[in-house]
Image 1: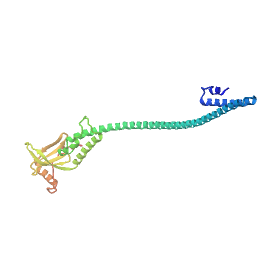
Image 2: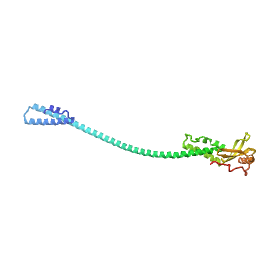
Image 3: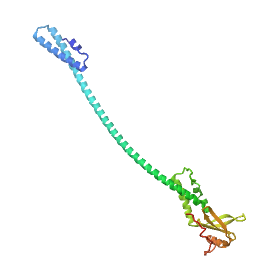
Image 4: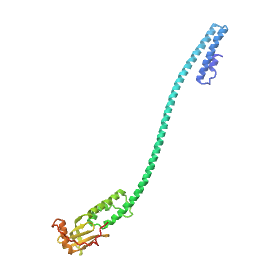
Amino acid sequence: MTLHEVSNRNTTLPLWRRHRRVAASSLCLVAGLVLGAAQKPASPAVDLDETRAALSKLVETRRILAAEKAEWVVGKELLESRSGLLTSELDGIRQRIDEARASIAETDKKRTELLASNEAEQEAASGLLDAVTALEARTRTLLVGLPAPLVERVQPLSQRLPGADAETKLSLSERFQNVVGILNEVNKFHHEVNLFREQRTLADGSSVEVSTLYFGISAGYYANPAGSIAGKGRSTPTGWVWEADEASGPAIAEAIGIYKNERPAAFVQLPLNLAEASPQE
C-alpha cells in the first residue's frame, strides 16, 4: 500500500479517525520499509527517500494527533463548563418555579381570606345600613317637634339627611356622623334652659318681639318685658303649638328677668300641663 492510497482511503471518515488511520498506515509503512530493507537488497537512494518520506509522514501524523488531542481537551473542558452552567441555570429555574408555586399558593390563601372577610364586611354593612336608615327616619320625625332655634342650629346637619327611600352618595360613616351630630345638639339643648329673642304673631295678626324661655325641647314660655303679652308652648308630633296666656304674663316675665340676672332669684310658678307636654324620645 502506498502513501497516496493511505491518504485517500476512507475520506468520508471523521477527521480524527482519518488522522488515526493515516498514523497507523504510516507506522505500518515505516515498519514494512525497514523489514523490506532488511530482507532484500535495494538501491540505497530509493530506500533513503522512502524512509524520509515515511518519517515525514509519521511526524506530520503525530503533529496532527497532538493538535487533535489538544483540541479535544479544550473542547471537553468547554463542554464540561457549558454543562455545569446549564446545570446551574436549570437548578435556578427549578428553584424559581418552586418559589412561584409557593407564591401562588400564598396568594390563593390570601385571596380566600379576603373573599371571606369581604363577605363578612358586606353582611355587617348590610346590618349597619338598616340601622342608620332607621335612625335617620326617627331623626327626621324628631326634627318636626323641635323648637325653631334648635332646628336652625342643626340645619347644616339635618339638610344632609336623605329622604325616605332616597338614594344618597354619603358613606355609612358620614350618615352616622350626621345623625350623631344632630342627637348631640338635641341632647344638649334638652338638658338646658335657653333664652331667645323671637318674633311672635299675635291673634290680631300683628308681630311683636318677645323673649322666649325654653325648658329643654318640651316646654317654652314667651313674654314682653312688661308681661302684658305672654304665652306658652309645647312640642307635638306635628310641631310646636303656641297659645296666648296673658294671665301668666307677670310670672313669665319675672322668670325671664331672673334668668337674665335682671331680677333677684325667687321661686316662680309657671303654668304647665303635664298631659300636654310631650318630650321626644
